[in-house]
Image (tube, rainbow, N blue to C red; front, side):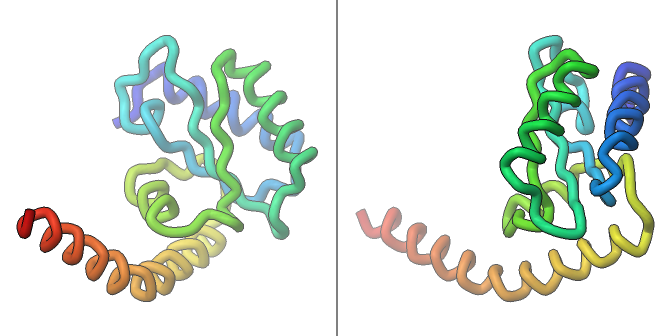
Length: 135
């Protein structure tokens, strides 16, 4: 359950993002979404636009959010995010902006990427375990 502080933060995030109409989806994750956030916790926010964000666009959005939230901002561009980060954001994050359809498209991409990525990850982990046990 989100705290009152987080709900206020979400309202500010949504207010800031409405001034950036190219942002179509936003997911709050990290300590502010999972709680409890500390006073020095940063704002972890994943966003998606129609196209990958340019460096200038990303910097402008980070500056705008940081100014209004009063915290450092870690901004992830969901159009470029891959596994396992994307899975962590979707599993532990809280959608604050965006349609069900856009969110479903992202979930579909995650499931497809995860099914492609998981066998390699599992093989690497098994090889590391085997190497560690054989020491």
